[in-house]
Image (cartoon, each protein chain N blue to C red):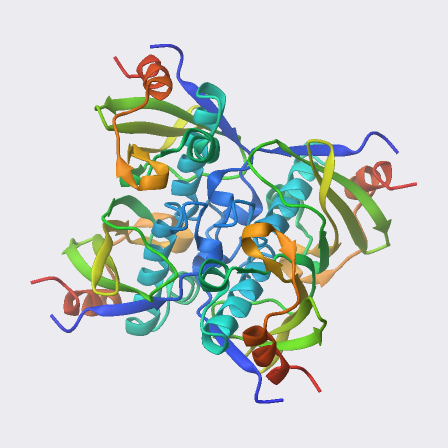
Length: 138
Length: 138
Length: 138
Length: 138
């Protein structure tokens, strides 16, 4: 595998709750933003481009996240995105968030592939599979 | 005018920032939620129904909000929605947020009407105008 | 167990993505809103009140969600909240989202209890345990 | 004035609504993110750092935004942040969002300065005024 793709987030005041740390509900959104950024950088476009230009939908069927340490605006948040499992019709992304060298959260996110305008399952199209294989965890 | 439509919001921990009050960026979203709830209750459906079932789009062209007092989770937030100005092709909503009898914010939100699938301006359709007139501030 | 607590959500246009269904990132936030509403209704206050008035923090350590069917603005979203597992220092909530009688998503959310101003783990305080036991799945 | 500060945003699928453009409620949040990024880059820290480390609060009293053209994920969104008006106790930021060379929205955002732990108005502290003056529109 190549070096894991990393998406950097500037955590803001508005992401934090009165405990002065990032609100739990923001973390899944950070993870999704990281996956979308991965696709933008590696696959020629995020979900929007894939759906509208390639008629390829990628609905989520599952997410699970472990929260290891609080996230704060004191450091950049580095989110790595890798492929944990690659099926014929689905992919599971592994997203890890680090701040200042410390693991803050880690999660798995499974998407299936559809023909977008038919809401019908399909095998992973070639242009997507090629990219996902490069980022598969050994 | 009839009694102003009121949309009640349960303000949450996650809406608040480290200053222990609702984050500024949440307020416009509360206002939009209130307008959508107004349309759901009074016009037979929010923006989603209007756009998909009636081919009526309502893009925003302007918003302005004055923040008068902090919003907190200690009280329900009551958002009233009225019509401030009604043109032939646009409407301006007036949204006010009160907590415990105190005005917390007030704002104006202007939308134009479009034929949704043509992205073309249109005069306000009859089913919408009828409702908006009833809620026009005298 | 008593009848499960149900929190009803008016799904909006702004919750939806270009696929005309609720964006994945909104679902965990709906679940958290439901848990907060449960606490507001059953425990005398949501996380804000618990943290500020009772010095009881409830940070999340884990969430996992299965997405079963799309959520749309066509029906109210009914989120039930029950207690799946009750430890001495942690609770796992079970949240299920239904629309029009159909299961749309289900998830588990684990929180630990802390003395808020010390960021120190604590056993579940009595006023919280009493409520949580009533909602424990048999 | 120096070159205006620019904050770049990767617009995502999740920012868009079923009309395939960014949802109105996201735009004020993009503007706030841009102001926070300005402070992070120019003032040694965003609102979080200012509030917690410098005891300087900056609550908003007013925002107004004109929406000029739709925002989409097809281009990076470039948000410029400048100072429109600088009082003794308040600042008005001017935020403009451009995509592909086209103005998409523009808005004004007024914040007052407080001694954070006293919720009391104060004159703009020196370290902040120095930065804001540099970015004042001539």
